[in-house]
Length: 136
Image (tube, rainbow, N blue to C red; front, top):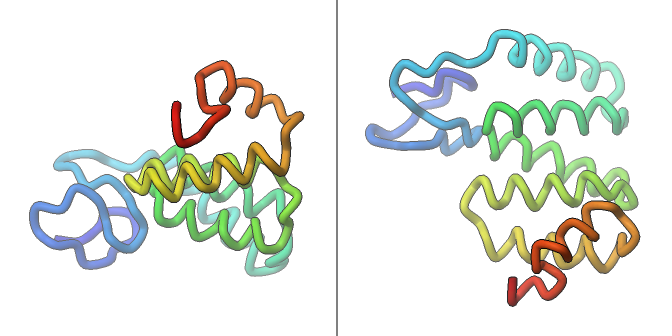
């Protein structure tokens, strides 16, 4: 079987692509507008690999398509390029959760809360009981 998004080989009966994290479902067509956005962002990053806004938007688009692995890759690059970009930390945790890596997501959320205690998402997490990440 082949991933409809990244065209990598996918094992039979797989629910997700091991390369890009896309959900594999019979008859599910990727959104052409989101694919066009991904192509546009990738072209921009070839021209300017340190463009944090474009890299963030690319990761966000991957998340909208549930391409968790691809989002994770972009967010890790972004976190290394711009460690004080709080939204990239939050989305990194979202991507880890999307991949089913709950413990890693919790670690990233804990770091996010420590680094950016005044961020609106931190207040939201605390309201939801994530002020003590280990005990939501």
